[in-house]
Length: 247
Image (cartoon, rainbow, N blue to C red):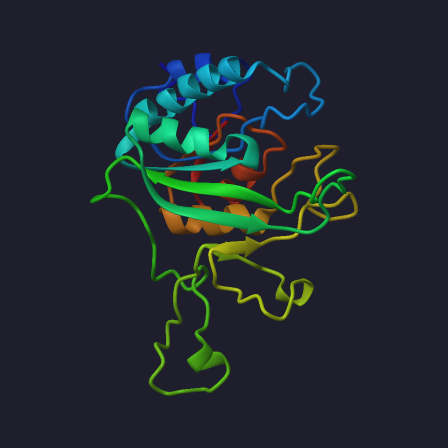
């Protein structure tokens, strides 16, 4: 069992590596798995038969459920193609869905024969719907209400309110009708010229998005696990926020 392997990267098959972890040892898991849409990875085949992809997904989600603590939280990022299937499978395994968040972004891939992709689904799952970490009073995840921001109403909650499930962090880039507190979150994708860009990884997550999730769903010194690693954004942000990490 990898009981002493915190704050380290582990290279290998994610299901095998998860299987080596102690049950009930992780506080928060964030997973951004391959979407099975034909993206070109160095080794992994991202265009499996549907039944193979769903079988594989069931295996690693089952391992995530096993390694999470009883009050642990699991966030899953996934595209349109398998969002519904993986939500149902996670529920079958034993997870409870607290929120279905939409991450809206620009700078997506331009499509010729359909509407351009501009969002990713973010599922917020917990093992126990009555006992889980959600730091609702953290000022860095709350937003000002219209009463505060527009009207300066003294009756407004001075702590603001929680974001809805539309997330927008750069409202200057979004239509005027968007509110920065709905259940669609706006975080610009990480372009090649961005300071936070790490080498070439076409699916790099923005640090702001991971920071909101980690702040909301864990405490300092909690263990944050990313079973897919990618460009390492989850682990980097976890370290910056004083969490232990593993990937």
